Image (cartoon, rainbow, N blue to C red; front, side, top):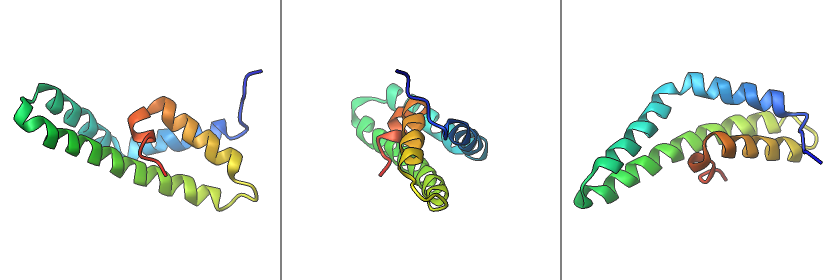
Length: 99
């Protein structure tokens, strides 16, 4: 049986909005990864930290969006699971930073 959440359309819209409003942050994440991949050994650790810091910022924004909407629901568990699952599919590294 395929699990299909009733919140899938809401979550998809929220993640699209996040991507539009935070395109500079998503570009920073991409650029940070490129810099890390090109870095020599001496600079790699610091650049990886910057890459993960950008993911942490994205995760904080996504958590705020998720939690704000979840507070409007009587039973938010299904929504939170759908949101986290969608973030995992779209931005897996950022999802690892979600609380």
